[in-house]
Length: 608
Image (cartoon, rainbow, N blue to C red; front, top):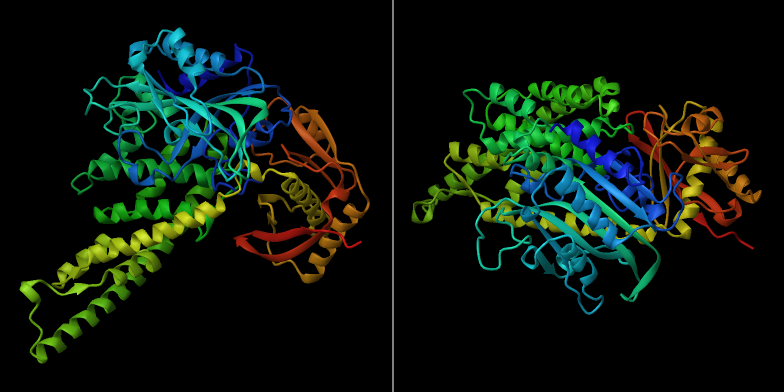
């Protein structure tokens, strides 16, 4: 089976069961501050999972492109990926547990012909906050699974959400493929990492809302949110042992084998390069055009690109072949994701720019590394002159872990390069010290991420709805003041402020910003009702609605109109009347990237 056939089979299966197909959304979640990238098919559906009506109904299905970096250190094994395609189906207050697992079982066993005995499932075992999910366990038994195929785990394994401190959450049931390997130990099960079991599908049952005090209350609308990894299922169906043996990776792996002939390019490094090339190609090819930078999505993109280049250099290979590998991905996927073909020149140009920039960065790191080693050498000579210079127990002098980490963190200089340089000059590197500094850095990043992700689904509140509405007014005002060529390039909203990125080639003057701010507040003062309409996307465009036209839309879209100021295709959430916004104030205007400006603004209470 090909990837195309699998995508078609999955969507057709659920369409036949009353689901409407929705298109894959951008890799950048719109107006969602909780994540850098779309990590699952549910992100574009957050307002609808919270009760807003979807224009295509209560049963939906799609194949969503996703980016996850939480497993980046596992990339290169048999199954973990940063970029992947997630096949999903949703019930927005329609069917629930029994029908959900029944459809999943039918698709896996009757359409993919996976023997039922090769499946294992997990269900929520219950805890002090919520009861065990025996309803789902019994549903699996009625489908024919034996007790020994059903594993019960706690919230660490079988509870989804909330993303933040409060919000929708619930038990899930995960479906695993049993590769038939012997159990590694008596307690071996799907939670084990020995490789016997690989997760292929997750059915989440959103039936609770977690409150501020930690208690759970029932949701008025109970939802089902499922996701199945296309690459993993394709691997299993075609009898392969890892994702890199599938058609999705073979062209890249074969080209890397040719490029690495006679070079030291281990299999794991080839896998990492192939995986990351695919990921960076999709990020650069996204309609919202993220470019490498030192913050947020641009930082992740830069990190992936530089990791590829490091692996090339480690093997003594030319990093120029990066663009050639990216072109393979573009040609492979352009029929499924046309934006890759449309943005081909942009993708290849940005890769060339980043490659040139990193080369200069490495040169600077090399100079700094040699300075550190020169100082170390001079210190050793001074010790020798004082008669105290013989290394203890014959051990070589050591470059501190702190300096090694500074080279890595500040200059992007690979630690293996530092080790090699030090070794050539008779020194060692304090790898224990380096690792401690690296772990400190990871912990800081983790805490920063926890702060960024603190909002979660709960952040889709009345305040974020007001801020979302303000972005529509801001976009309309910018087009009127700066010109119709201005277009939205991204936004980020949390409970306190909005951030709005837009295409524009120069700094916006103070006078222009004052005009924009006044125009938004004028709309607020006029107390305008926000009008919602549902229509086909072609009709929306003909009516003058603004949207990201390079993205795909479903058969029906929502159009929100603020008469006289804005008309946009959007999923929400929104205020009902502009009066609810209070007072709009711009905090800052700055560059975001080449040709893109950024405005940060807040809503304040009106003075009475």
